[in-house]
Image: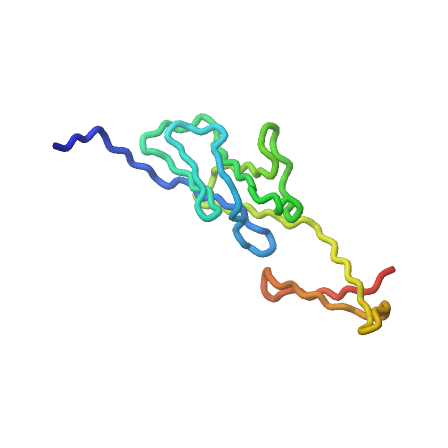
Length: 152
């Protein structure tokens, strides 16, 4: 005996991800949530991407729907420049309005300082009058090379 109670169709409505603005890599350590979840809407994370689905015949929301993407890897806190969270949102959270079916939100890296001490080998005495070339190991091609000059 087979009993059928009903049938529901769910469609993929939105895919949203955070992307490193320099390397283009997806930031995969994220959680996602719909803060004001409309009836019939669900959200989950797959491979760093928020997947938002909507059940057919769900009522149209009165207000624009947003998804919260929260970076869960605390080590990234000092490496990314995330916007200040909205009041009541967790730290390291980006609030994204669900306007496009597919969205990638660029997150810029935090400014970093590179300190290099050049020394003579094998004495260890300071090496002066040199220029050091630094080249990126990832990011867009061609990879930029920056000449670091000596400073006091």
